[in-house]
Structure formats: C-alpha cells, structure tokens
Image (tube, rainbow, N blue to C red; front, side):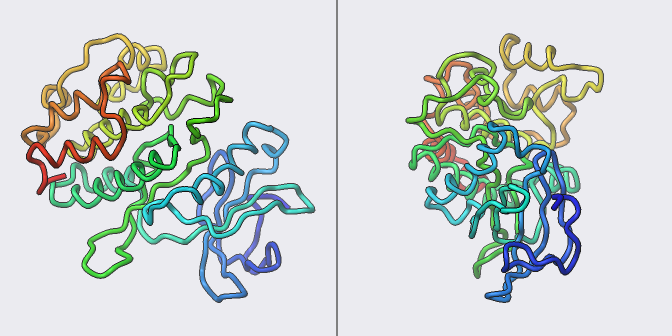
Length: 300
C-alpha cells in the first residue's frame, strides 16, 4: 500500500473509508476519511513508504501522537488514533478534520492582518504553545504553515486556531537530541538551533512566536534575505546569528510593509528575538502576558 495511492472507497485499518486525498508532503500524505464506527469525517495521515526504514523520520512521525496527547489545550490538533499498517509497516495517525487554511496561506491571500483579527489568532496560538511548555514540551518548528486557522468551533468565537506537527518536538528531560533533529524551518529557527549543544528550551519557541507575530502584523517575513530569491542558507544564517537585529518598526519600513507594527510592539519583539535564550521571555505564557500587560490588550 502506497501513501500516495489510496483510492476513494478503500477501507484502511478496518474503520476508515477513504473519501479523497487532502494533501501530500515530504513526510507523507493526508486523506479525508469516514470513520465507519462513528460516521464522523476525519483526517488520516500516512507516512511515505520510502521513509519507513529511516529510524529518525519514523520516530518523528510516531512521536506526533504521543506528544499531542500530553498537551492540555484545545488549540493543539487532536490525534484520535494511531497505529502501524501491518502489511506495509507504515505508521499512521487519525486526526480531527479541520476546515480552514494555515496561517501562511491566510497571510499570502489577505496580507497583514489588522490587530483586531490578529488578536484571537495569537491568543490561541500562545495558549497552545504555553500548554506545551507547561507539559515540558518544546515544539521546535513553529511557523505559519504549522498554525491552522479553522472555522470557529464554539459560539462567540471568530476562528479556532490549532497548532500542528509536534513531530520534532523536544521533551525537556530527553537529552537525545542531535544537531539535525534540533533544526526547525530555517526562516523561523532560533540561533541555538544552528549550534551543537543543549540550549533548546521554551525560549526557542518564543523566538519563533516573535517572528510569526511580526509576519502576521506586517505581512512580511522579518529576514531581508527572504526577499532575495538568490540568497542562500549561508546568507540567512548570517542574518540570524551575526548581523544587527533591526527593531520591528525599522525592519517593516525597510521591507516596504504597508502597515507598521502597533505601538509597544518593538520592545516586546526585541525580547522575543534576543540572541541569548536566557534573556528572552521564559516561555510562551510569559511572552503573551507581557504583550497584554504593556498596552496591546485590545490588539494582540
């Protein structure tokens, strides 16, 4: 059975009838399925068969279910079942099916979000990441593509945010983290993710939260080389690790953003992206509380 070749009508693991393919990426494929025992529509995620023999990638895939189950937040995508397909050896997950788009697609479509629209998104994002930190878990790959903005699931809410892909999350007490495992997506990774050593902690996610907030409010990625199609990884790493970090307002202006960050944002952003993890906010909950404390209560 191939992750990319499940056809409509196929019954998988005895309880999930394939409705249609939903997406396919580097790690695997996702299908819309009907759970036969309940009649509820779900999302089935299968690992690509050519990756099954790679122990580190298999561990990453299988970890997603275990980690998500430890986090007490309705804003982490729920993994409802998991297993291994006996004939093929492919790990699989069944998750709640979400209706909406990820934050990257939302910004690509709509541009910078007004603060009133950004506030509930960031509130819920910080709730999820803060709950992960409280459970001793660092996501390590926060980026707009891993923040899903779905239709509201409760009365009175505008949207429901779900954080995806805890596959490379780190549990604080687990010291078995290689340099490669430590790296997230380059545009959002913190300086310590480029190093050997064990400095990765909740502050690593705080760095990414600062960059995500900048992008949400300005519609632009913070790093200058993100605007240059000829810039490579070396240029990006130089910006992340060595070059002076402009204030959020100055960088937004340099990038030609049509919207400036709100008053008070510069100081908060600077603390998020301090190159020394010890001088950042301690975790997502602290970062969120400070943002609200110094006057952006009605914005973010």
